[in-house]
Amino acid sequence: MKTRPLAGSAALAAAVALTATACGGSGEPAASGGPEKVTVWIMKDSVTDAFLDRFRTGFEAEHRDVDLDIQIQEWDGIGEKVTAALASKDAPDVIEVGNTQVAQYAASGGVRDLGDRTAELNGADWLPGLAEPGKVDGRQYGIPWYAANRVVIYHKDLFARAGVTGLPKTQDEWLAVTAKLNRGRTQGIYLPGQNWYTLSGFIWEEGGDLAVKDGAAWKGALDSAQARAGMDFYRRLQALGKGPKDSDEAKPPQAEVFAKGEVAQIIAVPGGAKIVEEINPALKGKLGFFPIPGKTAGKPGAVFTGGSDLIVPEASTHPDAAYEVVKALAGEKWQTDMARTMSYVPNRTSLARVIQDDEGTAAMAAGAAQGRATPNSPQWAAVEATNPIKQYMTAVLTGTDPARAAATASQSITKTLGS
Image (cartoon, rainbow, N blue to C red):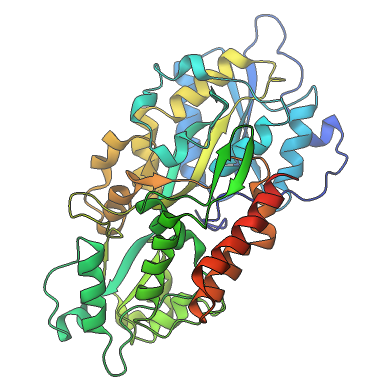
């Protein structure tokens, strides 16, 4: 999660005409007797060049009949580029896509169903937040690759100064600790009013959802009792700090606010701590991490899982070799290497052990086991484009009747998902 924010779905721009050459696909099969040239699209900054070099060398050593052509793609404009590639006869063989983009691409009909391979790929152990959005109408189009999710980053000195000696394990404990921290110049937590990915986790923890499928159609579900309970918890937590009620974590950048040293907690991916330390080096070594608490102490709270899946286009000219690439990247050897290299959460819950020595990543992995993704509708990106969820949050936090605000937002989501 380097240049791409943890936003999951990315709105597709208007479709543009791309030639088969522009798609940069796999081209013609290799001449008889020569190795197959397998083209793999990897997104910029998803992994390091060194990791890709290790993977290419290792894979080709084990598959003498394959030459890997790994092509780095920019996130800007990738939606229309992938859509065009899937519709062409010259598609790449493997493509990395955002986990919540799979439904959009599967709707085009150009993605291969790999559902018959899930047992071989240890699919029963996959992180739900990666596996579920990769599965559409019972077909597994996306194979989980890596994940990242939000945790609580806290200021150890401020916790000690307030006499907080134990980290909260439940939502009730979290509220009590945060209230204790919220004294004088210290904000108990900096939580902007429109951090809707965090709200999503609170809603899921209550058993609610952002939208649900009703027969063949989708409808907004923010007006359910469970979803409204999630919003009420958000309201209570948000009040224990001075976060703006009408903007998100980017305006102003919450890392800059936290770096001033008067905020006890923020909710962010663990890498956010490095940004804070770059802004204020005096905080180096003073920041800690814990999973977002749930309703009970037995497990962390539900969280939004961002990350990437791997897909194989129907137009791949080397589908068997493409599957071998996916199998390797999703397998234990390269999952372990990538997790340790990039501080990502591996695609399997059982592999969380490989990152236990890193406090931030370990907290993230604990939360990832309760990870979820946005509703698996091809139209969800259109919901994010106008984002009535943000408007709903601000309305509730500024005094609008919660039931009325939830009904309005749910109606907007239903209309967009039905368009």
